[in-house]
Amino acid sequence: MEHAKAAVRAFVEHPFHLVKNLFRHRKTRYRGLAKNAHQLHALFALANVVIAARRRAAA
Image (cartoon, rainbow, N blue to C red; front, side, top):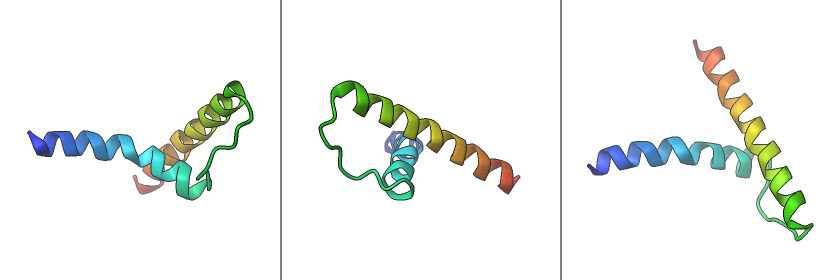
């Protein structure tokens, strides 16, 4: 059971790792909730693009 949970957790945490380390998004300044939400949506969309490109390059 713990192995299954760990597999899901690792899959979900990978985009967060990319956003924090590759895009250097460590701290969020108060710009307004809408701006912060839009910035995070854009960063996670870019993280999905990076993940897809890496999978395509590996194949």
